[in-house]
Length: 84
Image 1: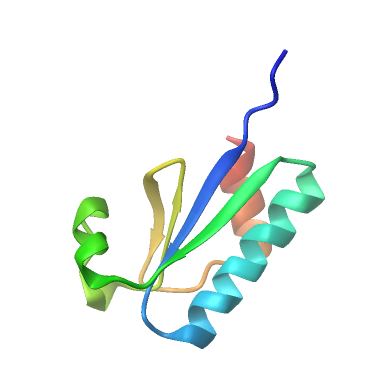
Image 2 (image 1 turned 120 degrees about the vertical axis):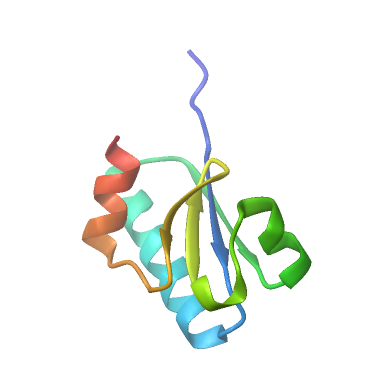
């Protein structure tokens, strides 16, 4: 059976917040043993694809679906999201 790679995307322009969200996501996925890819998106024109406006960033999307917007999610929250 092929292992699925979860695609985690962090959308935003604030480098500090985006890095924190990306680090939390990578750590959460790693602790769960989930194969993952973390991508940071800082192109405002890409936000539209996720139905996100700049004021709703940072945002976290998993497998193309926004799960958190407007704040940096903690590692435990991301673990809960990835477990579903």
